[in-house]
Amino acid sequence: MVKIGNIETADFPLLLAPMEDVSDPPFRAVCKENGADLMYTEFISSEGLIRNAAKSVQKLDIYDYERPIGIQIFGDKIDSMREAAAIAEEAQPEIIDINYGCPVKKVACKGAGAGILLDIPKMQEMTAEIVKQVALPVTVKTRLGWDDSTIRIVEVAKRLQDVGVQALTIHGRTRQQMYKGSADWTKIAEVKHHPDIHIPIFGNGDIDSPEKALEYKKTFGVDGIMIGRAAIGYPWIFNEIKHFMRTGELLAPPNMDERVKVAKRHLEFSLEWKGERQGIYEMRRHYTNYFRGIRDFKPYRTRLVESDDPQFLFDTLDEIRHEFADAFAMA
Figure (cartoon, rainbow, N blue to C red):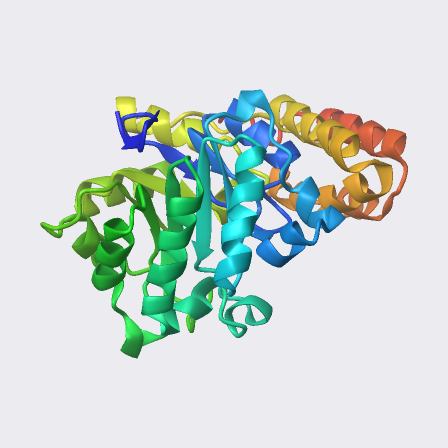
């Protein structure tokens, strides 16, 4: 059992990454149903929260079946982050998470997200203030450094642990890499196996199969794995990894009935949570992955991503189920 403060998770927890415009309640619902142990919200702007911006406040929505769940916040101003942490705590998550890893220009180049890796003393001070502000466990997600010349991840981990962070997730790339190249898990392992580090260390980056998950667990010795892009449109990856780790056998991929069932469930929740217009729009990014690998699927994908009619979308999904019934049948 891995403990984050007083929160107990699985022996080797699989975490859902906090992905902007992806890790919303509808997506988290299908990931939880398919084996995710610990999930985080999309990252939420501290400035948006303290100004009561509707988009930021809506991201605080969490549901009992998601627990344990963490709310992730980001920002570059210590006072704003402290106040935002207090607001997030009122939403009653199990964990407050700080984003020190987002690489996108509009965040990082303003000193938030991965941008704070250029000012480690400020990172430590900000984190200390947040830990003092809230009663919940505080965790952090970060990257190896800003670029190859600024990788000080062991020092970062020790400083964060010293001010009370209860777990650390490390994406094995620098900010300069964005999502290119390969994640360097050897540096994640350096943190995990450092004699002064005793908090859980979770690895993130490039895990896209059960085989790789088990290999990285054995090779690098992390306490758990955070999965991001590989879960988009494929929430089954969590249970597939768990089954493979437990038995050494690969589960059969989900058949067409299961893919359509989960896609419809996702769409239903998206409509319920976001409303018709936004719910339809935000679901569009997921369809390709739900049905990846089907030959001659393009006309159906076009219908799914261009229609604004919920019933037409459900009817199209049913048509896909019948038209491609044998697409994922095992040989």
